[in-house]
Image 1 (cartoon, one colour):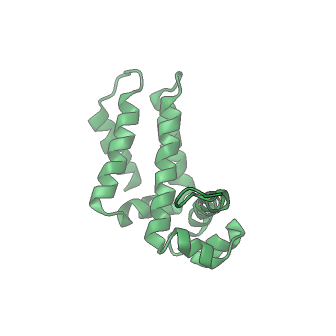
Image 2 (spheres, rainbow, N blue to C red):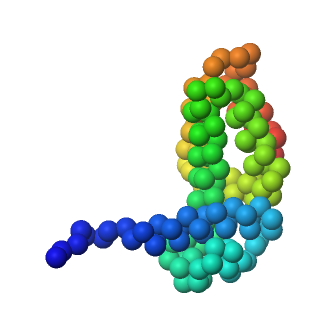
Image 3 (cartoon, helix red, strand yellow):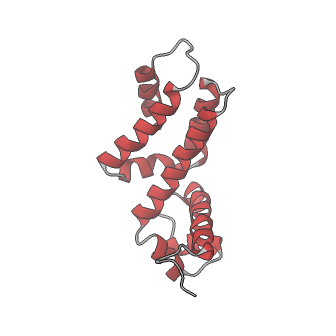
Length: 145
């Protein structure tokens, strides 16, 4: 019996998900300077598992930011979504995650631009109210500043 080349093991996927969830919580509570060991402990995995998935703090923080952007996209994709709903998610993330803004600042310019473009695309898909997308993105940047 042969197995496919490099199959993604279900436990590896589960561990990665546990680590991102734990990192969101730990970084929200303690900021970007939180010990990586605290993330591994919260996820219930060993540090080796953490470093296999995320070799450094920036890689882990970027995965958390990706998850945050995915949350924004999911809310914006709802058929009944409004601008208020999307801004609510963004505001909640900024208030409850002390690391959110720091993660954005740590990301390289290309990554930050890519994620900002994803948020812009999500907002562009909302029913038009009395707002301009560029002005809205500027307001989000100002709030995060």
